[in-house]
Amino acid sequence: MPLQIGFDISPVIEKRTGVGNYCYYLLKHLVALGGAEYVGFASGTARIALGPLAASVSQVHAPLPTRALYGLWNVLGFPAVDRLLGGVDVYHATNFYLPPVRQARTALTIHDLAFLALPETCSPKIVGPFSRSIRRFAHRADAILVYSEATRRDVVRFLEAPADKIAIAPMAVDEGFIPMDRDEAVEWVAAHYGIRQPFLLFVSTLEPRKNVPGLLRAFAKVKNQLPHSLVLIGSVGWNADDIFETIAALRIEDRVIRPGFVPHMKLPAFYCAADAFVFPTLYEGFGLPLLEALACGCPVVTADNSSVPEVTGGAALMSAAEDEDAVAANIVRIVSDSALREGLVLRGRAHAQQYSWRACAEKTFAVYRELAG
Image (cartoon, rainbow, N blue to C red):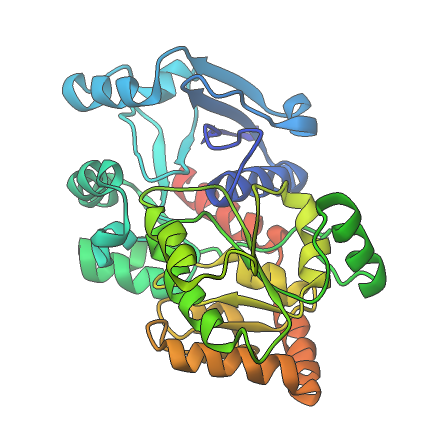
């Protein structure tokens, strides 16, 4: 008899970003593996967008705002989520929050611990509730899933969770993130977004943890040496005012382009048209845009902290995120040194090919199977 797996699909919305992509692609490849039946659980008012997966995954929706449901669970401890799903062998809490269960074994994904490591870079709406509950959830969960060795170390360090119940199942990039003809990519980006070469690229939610003001200051240091624009792809997140104030203060409005949110599968054209992906982040549990850039053959300038060295595998120019002179120097190096670029591109593509969603699904399913006995 196949395992019965409950899976939190709440992050899989139409404009999905990091956690939503993790949930969607992991579930897609879990279904392809076979050996289990999946029941997706969602709460809140956002429309769930499983696409073709909807035919293979049954769904249960709690018609309550997510925070109201969390409040109910925190205060009353019910309803048990496995009961809501009709009984499952394992419930996978995919987005930090572990609801009460009656009988199911539980797996908890911890994407990162930025709200503990760098709380000043995260919204108080996250820092407060998550900091209070994540330690309790980590100790109650039967297994913990993380993307990287760096996050595994953080879970042990900050939460004092037993190392032997933490499994590393790295994310990957979709099959569509591959090098495309550069001229075609340049033409597509120009035609659909009005953005012309040459440009440097950043992709992520615009929020303090991504160090966008630092990136802008590094870019301003070299703007007179290079003809490039800086393209910032991503929705505006918490406390982003400093980003726009920095653009104005540096008087680089004419060199910074903000197309906003770009659908996930449109990103490869940007990676393939850009001269470099510049990502001096302060902290990452994984940093999927880094792997996307490497897979598409876009050379990378980034930071040397958290999971970044692990994810880029020696195929990027790195410096301290806060060292804006070093970031600026690396931008100039990667743009002007063609031999360096070519070497980084080759190493980056080879490194990215070591990651796959199938491998992520296999490692995750092995956790399910071990929990279910």
